[in-house]
Length: 68
Image: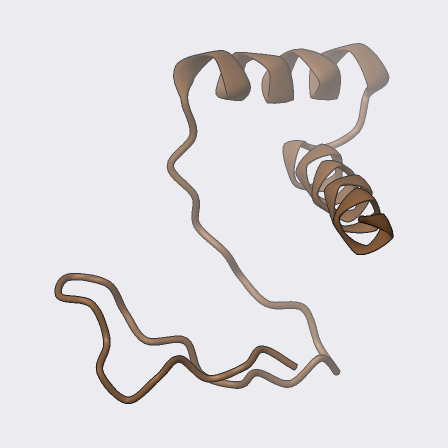
C-alpha cells in the first residue's frame, strides 16, 4: 500500500492515494533523454517490451532500496 501524503500537499503536485495491489496500475513518467534511450535500447536488444524493461528496472531499484 502507498502511504497517504500529509493533509497539506505541495502546490502543483498531486496527492497520492492508497491503491490496491491486487491489479496492475498505469504509471506515466517523464524520463531524461538518456534514460529513455537506454530503456528503448534494452527493450530492442532483449525483445522485451519497454514496459517489461521498466518494470524490472523499478523492481531491481526497490530491492536495493529495501536492502539499505
